[in-house]
Image (cartoon, rainbow, N blue to C red; front, side):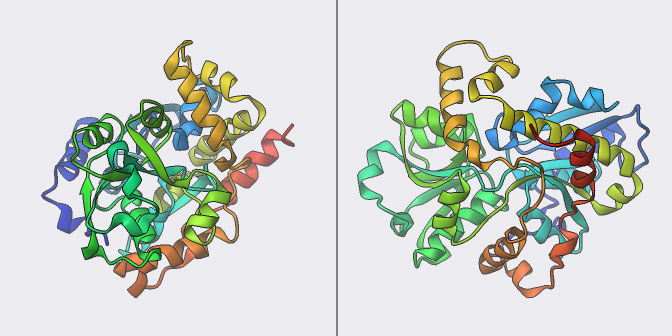
Length: 348
């Protein structure tokens, strides 16, 4: 499904990654505790990546002695490119990327899991809503995804396949996320598309879209995808993890602490922690978080049944993963979340 990094050399995202590397001078050189660590987030405003945002807002990175810079990139596949050229120490993105990268010869592993489900929804433009009853109605439609190598593309193709459609039966359109996704839907450039919260709730509330498929909770994901699909994570190049274990542990401890905050606070309290003022945007954010809160891992551990089912789903639509061996045990590690939970003590 994805192109290799070499085949993507001409794309703007790749050159942005190289430029970032040149400007920052980061590369893969060892970083000291005082050096700034860059985490590339595949959409900083997305609720699926809430833990990293909270860790920054609440000072959890600082408490661990870290100077962390969060940079936002709307598509996970573009964030992945930045990681591979050394422009960031980690990517806050979808776990399934680690399988594809390993199949392409890149050693990458998730060091902490944020969500037990994708947290995504398939929306249909409101004027067309009556013509959609299931993904079987994707046939002949233009479907929005963040990017052609993205997890939203993977999930869109999976939903279509599970309802008997072939890739040639519909057209996938890369439209990015956030405002660019909303504009594509409003302008009629896509008939339906996959996005995440809080944008989904905002578009539904405004009457621009209706929900067709819900992947926000583990229960809904089980129904739609036939099994568990752990999703949002922090993944890093394995070589960097092995040579910077102390810093990885500090990062993971801060992020597990943020996961606990989500479990211990109400959606309204979380919105306050993010500095959100009273108003419609805050109310919609709280509503979206209330409806999808079950997706968050309480401790950062990968569920045992998750990786095998993710591999099954990815292999069905990604020839590289299907045709090459993937060692799931190397796509994630529990080493750092185990220590983090021990240091933080029992969840209250």
